Image 1 (cartoon, helix red, strand yellow):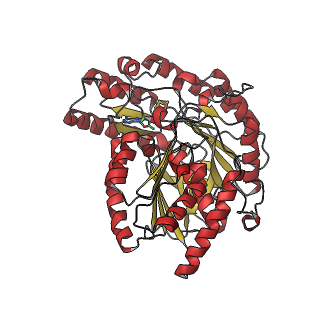
Image 2: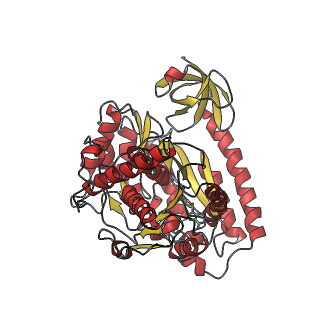
Image 3: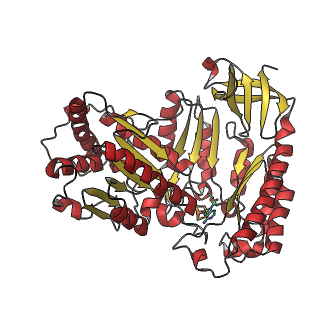
Length: 513
Ligand code: 5AD
Ligand code: SF4
């Protein structure tokens, strides 16, 4: 956040401002006073616990949510016996949803012992109407529900929750203030209501991006930076476009300003985040391509490494390949989800490339950037997938030899075109294919990842090693993990490490050359 805000000086006698982010500063000040009163009553600081499910987008959102909670006065804890517990959910596969429902049962037992606890749910799962309905009726102990488009409103929603409690007592079913039963102005198709004191505010979509809110970063030396939100691709299996909305790019000047600020705070590595970074800039008044943005970020003094994800193969331009090859700071790592090796299935998936086009693209990238590390996502068991289709996927894996691949069993997501496809593949067939794929992916990745053995590499020291005393864990430019002896004072620095031993997915190394 650029501006220093003295929340104690904000006049709460006045009505809340209409404009963002000022409106949220107002509600942060208000929530801070409620929290201070609560903390005085309990005779201890209030605690908050955020559990993040899913992808890096969600992790970044959680950092923003934690930033808001800390300004309100909450202290962070990993323990779900906290005063405020927030689940930032994912819905990309059904398993993620099941985990949330399972964990909610556990939270309910905690809340029975501490009725003052506030439970909030946000993220992709909450963008699904049937999920919200189920929570509203079957998980009535939940206090706040909001979606992916309005995370910046957390302080305002928390204030509503505090006010509802004050006006009606914790358990009582108070009257719904008019302001809550009306959609709020800023979103499209907003559902904002308060049943059983549950504050619900989920927007169907939005065209706005609220800048200048606080962020509490997990690592002092590296950070995710959103460059765009949403997705317009509508791959037929994927729920993301429905829950994250249409593609919106942040203005390059806002992105550059944020990265400069991060660098001034000690960040040396950024990960530019978007569902499909290759189509960055299409929604801006003045078109800027992703490659042009990368070139600008590459100029930022003090920044050492630039990563990005995710790239859709259909949009990966020659300009981007040239930029990756020539830029000083862009890491030679590309996450390029293939999803399937069968052109027939790719068509059904609405991926808009064929197996041959994917393989040609990989060749082109490797010619321009010989040391590129390639990773991918693969789905097994998409409706109608035959053994022949699966063999095509294995063939791509053999030919490309990915550094690593995330393999997923197809999960039927309600509302997506693939969910209506009739020829769903039986579970046992999918499981068998999945096991065969995983085995091959792991074997290849163990061979490929060893290619830098006995060389000296630049490694960003990230944290103390979990298993070995006196060791640190870091990452090479191509994202491979290295463990090496080192002092904690090196954390956040890029150091030379000699790779002594390859362990398949990671190296053991020692400092120096
Ligand atoms: N089933 C299985 N995997 C999926 N993914 C997206 N939707 C589904 C689904 N319905 C995978 C894709 C994507 C990654 C983030 O999640 O491989 O690249
Ligand atoms: Fe989902 Fe496809 Fe968009 Fe990725 S590009 S988020 S897989 S719809």
